[in-house]
Length: 58
Image 1 (cartoon, rainbow, N blue to C red):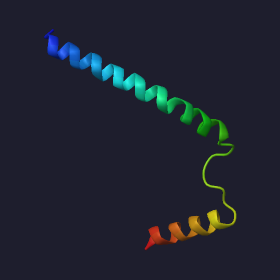
Image 2 (image 1 turned 180 degrees about the vertical axis):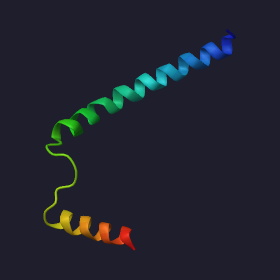
Image 3 (image 1 turned 90 degrees about the horizontal axis):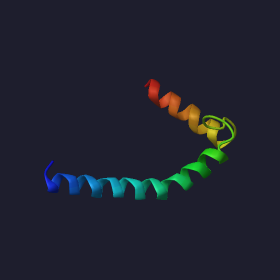
């Protein structure tokens, strides 16, 4: 394997690991705080949902 390709792969792997380390805590907090699946269908969420459904039928 050429040295340049191996070096590029190593740098890409470091960037991937660093990005994963920065995003993982935020993803964990978001996942833990999500009590229900989907949009809450009450109040403004319901109005938005119905409006978007009607717009998609036109």
